[in-house]
Length: 395
View 1 (cartoon, rainbow, N blue to C red):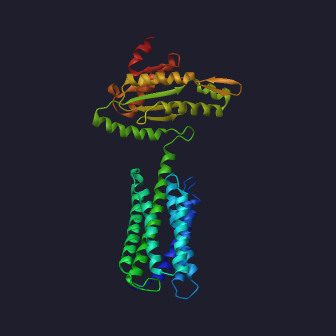
View 2: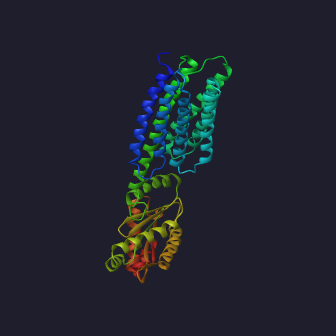
View 3: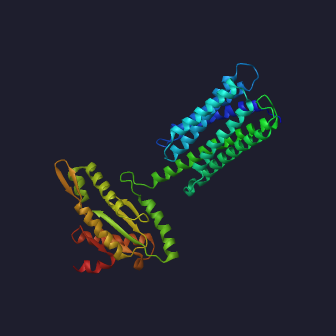
């Protein structure tokens, strides 16, 4: 083979340092995304570990401790990759098990490198140790995730699977080849090939972690673009997008789609009397109450100003009316403390469904808006459905 193992170590050491810089720079930009700093430090540890591996690969006496330190750094880097993945996924980290892994690595490296030198046994034990960690990393990643992140997760997980299989294969081959000479200074396929493949797979892992981060950033940007900055509920653009999707589903299944338009009564007076900060609190309170009242499959959005929109799947006008009345009562019972005053909030709600209007979102909004206008003209703090408008107009 043209490249010896030590040359591969040096090359990957340089690449690992570059990934450290990339992750470190990314960590400065990603805000509250956890795990990136662990990946940065992991790459740095691996870079230093591979650098030391170059020196302990030499036959000059006195380099035994470099082997111990190098293996410890690489074990630490692998553990940090795992903790970073768990933090990225917002899962708990069992630090005691990871510390135990590092302690075992230090002990066996010291024993087989300094106290009772045995390069072959050190390689076998190391291979089995890293096989266990890589398997855990793969298990954490190869799970059901959102479609937008599946490629990144499964690519990285597959890289860890390949690393785990490589380590297991190496341990088995060394066990079956008791007479094989092991060491970085020995350029045979049993030595060089695993290092070359492992270096390429570690490169693949680092690329996969960056891919995961990129997909998370894209998802976060989309989430920010689809949410109202003040209340945290969906914005108008997002609910219009969902309405298009729901229209296609309802046309296919024959389900009825209901809509509510909700308007806060006398909101301008609240802003004028108490100021916009209090008006903002009112908007947030209304959004919070409504969000807690809907099902997981329904959609609630701030449509504009003090007006909110709710899309209810598989719901007819009468069912939507029942929910609207419960919401109206919940709002009427809520009070907001402003200084020494207690501010009561009421809302007017217009309700319509697709059985008479059709599934076009603009038509549904127009119908519910007409019912909402009727509710406000009739004294506010009430619910009016689209089919009740004739009664409303004659009253």
